[in-house]
Amino acid sequence: MKFLIIAKKEILDITRDKRTLLMMIGFPLLLMPVLIGTMMKITTSQAEKASEKEIKIAFIGKQYAPNLLNAFSNLDKLIILDQISIDSVQSYIQSEYLDAAININPDYESNINNNSQAKINIFYKGTDSFGTAKERIQMVLEQFEKSIIELRMNKLDLKPNIVKAYNIEFNDIASKQEKFGKLAGGWLPYVFILFGFMGAMYPALDLGSGEKERGTLETILSSPASRFDIVLGKFIVIMSAAFITAFLALAGILIGIQQISVIPPAFLTLVNEIFTVKTIALIMTLVLPVSAFFSAVLLGLSIYAKSFKEAQSIVAPLNIVIIFPAVIGTLPGIELNMITSLIPILNVSLASKDIIAGVINPIYMTEVYLSLFGFAALSLYWCVRSFNKESTIFRN
Image (cartoon, rainbow, N blue to C red):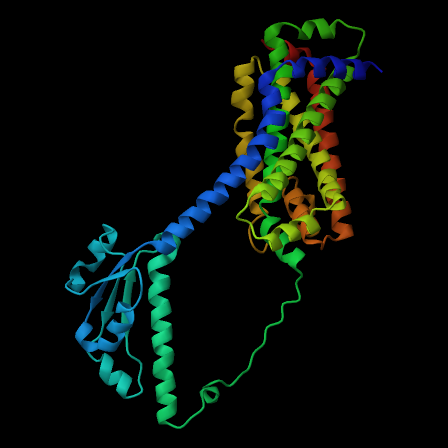
């Protein structure tokens, strides 16, 4: 078939382009594990630093709660400053001279002795790394409050259970796979959708506007192949590049996770149980029509552009367009249904999330396939029509 000859020729041209090969193979397969590993190591390192950090706390009103002050004094890696006025607290915390401040009301002791609530004001900065200062203060206060309540109950000769009317037991019936799917399944489709688009972008720009600049498009047009054969040949190559890039991005993530030493073994076991051949195959069946959709649209825009530079300026904003629906799929409350199944890119994100969670609805899945293949067919039809117009091909 003539379109296969065109496709073979375009594949040979693409394999000579090191930049395209780097984006298709090198970046997703090699760089993704490095990025994931680096991100995990940085996060772990920062969390360790935050836990070992020596924090400074202003304790205002120490004379009203000496016992509480002693409780904080016994805490490791904590410096208490008791000579700071309440008026200076906010400026000191903003300037990071202080990590937090505790202000005790003058009626603290009388309220405690009268079995009332004692008010304590805590000042902290919400952007504090990992919320270290707030967590340490809250931990001490909760322990101290528990001891006060126990003393009160003993004085009244009451059992602690008397203040609890319910004995509530929450039973989560969601499996580990469902929890993982809802958590990680939100951002994972976002990754391979983005890489699928990137994998299609460079070959599409090169096989459309790139050939215009090189003057090789006229040579192909003068061949015995019909214009439909030419478009179909180019389209197959671009779609294959998009699909391979998306697959390698997913493979890069899974390989990267296996190589990270800080990930708990139980989590690795769960990942290996979820990402079976069947799960990956189902996800890839969603990527295929999306790759076709991206390929046809990008090829049509590339053929329309006068030059490679103009094609880049036209295609660049589409990065935002495809990211937006993919990000919506990560938001809580957005689920796969009869309506969202029809929205391209968003339906891939939501369907992939349900596949990973193991709760995919066959009816919605069918609707997703029909929607994706429908949009892919329409975009390919538009691409062929554009290529048949002399005013489009010879715009330059």
